[in-house]
Length: 186
Image 1 (cartoon, helix red, strand yellow):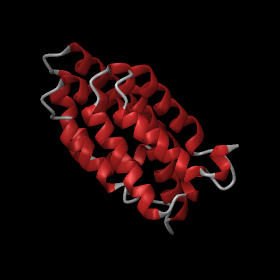
Image 2: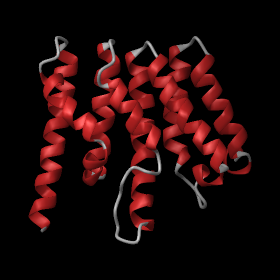
Image 3: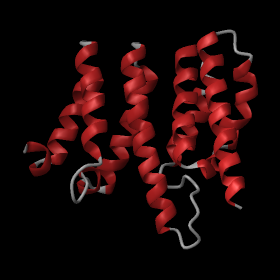
Image 4: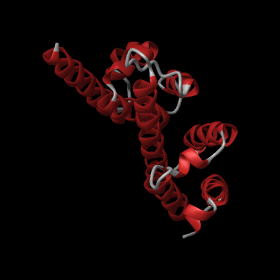
């Protein structure tokens, strides 16, 4: 279909709709379609994009989270970010001579999460911790590449907004369980 023949055009169109349409249902569907199709195919759609387009795409996803007002849409964009980050970090780990993952394949994500965990809007803080938890679930060693995010968790557990507290607790549990699983393997 169109996705395999013209991936750049389709990704650009979905991203543009995600960022510009006033219809929240369309924005949600765009985030879901990007997540479902970005890492499919051989070679993967994401890998068919040039490095410059990949970087622009990642940047626009982060901007979309920062600017999105509707929780469901923001959550779906966050899921797309988490999935893409997990893929990039696993790929980085597999390509590293010592099998390490440092987050270097998407440094802007760590910067974004650092800033978002202290954002004045509780929904942005909650989204940041949710993304962090999902990434750490797939790549636990990334917690060391995001020390500022980890250091904000105790403060988030005392956040005045229960949604942030809840997500921070889930992030803490995910982090501890993943680190515990890793220590069992040693």
